[in-house]
Image (cartoon, rainbow, N blue to C red; front, top):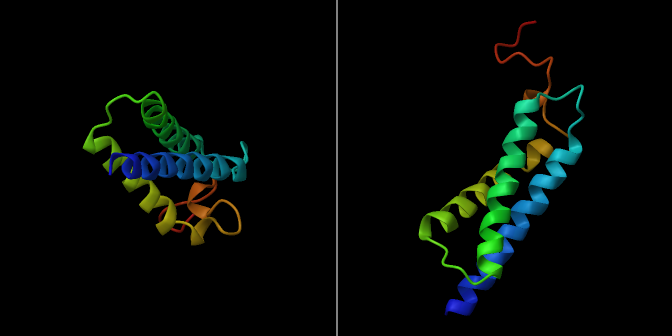
Length: 100
């Protein structure tokens, strides 16, 4: 059972890393707000830390797995918005109220 949980954890961490790196790659420095780049970079760093703990056979707490699960869910729920590149809400010229 422990091996299965470790493999699921490793897979989740790798999925988060790949997803965050791909989203960062879709953003352009002049067109997209830095905060969105930072959000995905921090998610990737967190997943990388949990991944290292799993690889080094260190104890991983339930809340770390819950964090990875939450990020995986976020990536899945927002997948359609990112299908054709970075969504409008990440752009520097986007106003949340619709005006300019």
